[in-house]
Every structure is written in C-alpha cells, then in structure tokens.
Image (cartoon, rainbow, N blue to C red):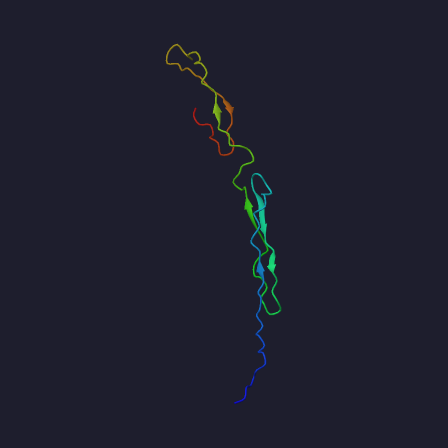
Length: 116
C-alpha cells in the first residue's frame, strides 16, 4: 500500500459580500412648519471582495416631516357681547334691534364665528 494525494488541498475561495452599517438617526426637519424634509444615511461597512456581491440598497433615505404643523396657531373666532336693545321702531307693532361685532376672526383650524 502506498499513500497518494498527500499534498495539502487548496481551500475553496470563500466570497465576502458587501454589508452596510446601520442607518444613522433621522436629521432634523428642514422646516419647522408646513412641511420640510428629513433624511438618514448609511455607509458601507464591508466592501465585497472579488467574487462577492456589493451591498444592495440605498445609502440615503428622505421623507417629509412637519407637514401637518401649521406656521400660525389656530385661533377661534370671538364675537363681542350683545349691545343694548335699541328703541322701538313704532308705537304699534314695532321692532327693536341689537347687534354685536366680530372681535377676532377665526384662523387655521380654529372655530369660525357662528350665530347672529
């Protein structure tokens, strides 16, 4: 009996695929009201070797932010108190009137003036 094939066998090449680092935190929104943009990034942590696959996916993501934040606060409408009744318009079957004014108009999502 004689030994054969005693040389060290060549190890098969193991391919290294590329990998990303975790995503960064989202950046501050570019607008404080009525919409802006925020983004996050990630970098390649491991480059692919000659036979590996490069990392798959984006290195930057963007999204809208503060879209529903109004730039001016909501304001409710405010009416003044009723004024005094006026004099009667006639000695028989007359009418009296009184009035009130808008002191502050509604804005945004605030309540708008209702009532006579």
